[in-house]
Image (cartoon, rainbow, N blue to C red; front, side):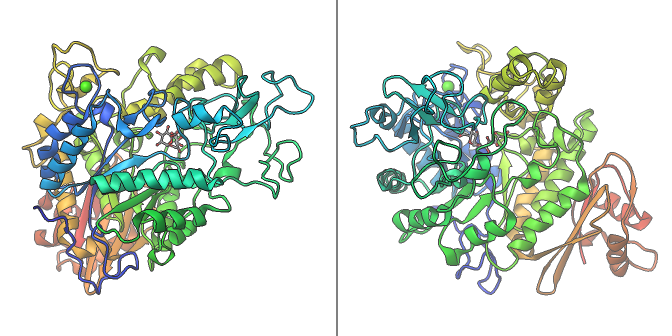
Length: 612
Ligand code: TEU
Ligand code: CA
């Protein structure tokens, strides 16, 4: 049986404050979006057998854990984040036997698998929701049902219980004549929010989680788990509903108010997470829990991920991937690097003593990082900037997450027509912002989609240069569910797999570096040259080992900033040169890095890690 215990961290090295260090202390997680990863039956959708067929690739990359986006039974309104049966696999992806085979084959290779747990809401086609439409059914109180506002005809504009809008457009309330009431949904109307105030709901969720862990799953990524506790008044009324002691927020340009301030990190957040830990994970080991945490700041991250509080192992925070727009996702702006560095420093310093950080720049909801913060306008700049961004992230303290295709330097889709998009968030935003509220022009929002649509990360994985990038067979019965990026001709795993200078080869080295060097996994982190607008530099220290990471995150040659230059000067020889063997890893070759250091300037997208 392969060993899972990759950690090379002695117990006197502090990680998240647990003793002994958690098994995942120097692990790297790889996120798979199954729908777009590998199709094996020609229906144009990725499937579980496809993932199993690519395990040797993932083992070669060196990742320790796979996070699968949802593969449960679902109407696929939000690509599986709307679950209608938590304990069965959607036929689109295969069967429970396929899941069992994937678990067994992954475990043989020393790779663990965590599933995506979506329990803030279910599908409106879940049996629980169907039953809850009957006010006399035991499930009647499993969701947030509310009557129409007094004086309004149910189902007519203005009759909604409050003014909240859904993240996916329109009101957050949907009227069901059968029950004569509205239900609350933060996301699409096919994703009704579960009522976590109801202990029967929590019990059912914990039972389901235990069922999967008993089946061999190694943990969960928990979808919007910091939205499950809603602010309510003593009578249980939501903000803004008739008679509530809590007003809901101001109405925005699209005609609705934002539920997030009343649903993010709510009053019972810690209680629910601690109860889940006790009811599901206590007594088990070898698991990983990571919560998706919109609305959580760095200080709350420390509390929730401090093992002493018995909640979650780590969280995904969002401040860093929300910092390059002014509140409206579809009106992006260029990255302000000092702002990003301040945010990342806040994350890192908050968990310096206890708690832990996740490290990600991409996922199935975010645009491709090489297009967003790098430069995909030429092959050379794409490869160099993808490596520079990977180096920057992976040299931080915490657990890195690699999103499928990020290790290849896959880019945004660069769609130009609305009919190329599939994501309901994108399509609903067009209808609401351009056609209904008329608050953004078609041209402006199409540019916003090209930069930020979630579909940028959901084009099929590029395995080779064939018609459908090897995602599905060229003669498949169906085309892929979303267009393959034509740049698969040059950007694909087959072209990169054996090339040590490829983005793939570079990510392999980053991952191996973490496995082999405790200072990378657990060393302290200190930002330097914080105001520099092009260079991201920081020092990692563990005992007497110190590594300087200095990355030029721009397409121009820039001078080494002062603090970095001083640290390098202290280890350089008389002629200012640094020995090539002091170069731990670099986005060019070691000789080029040494020459750059000697010259005091970094080439475009040049990143270097130097042992001080
Ligand atoms: O995402 C929640 C969430 O925060 C996203 O709505 C994110 O803010 C947005 O996509 C960025 O524009 C989780 C899942 O990752 C996402 O795929 C689901 O659509 C959503 O929850 C509902 O389950
Ligand atoms: Ca398939």
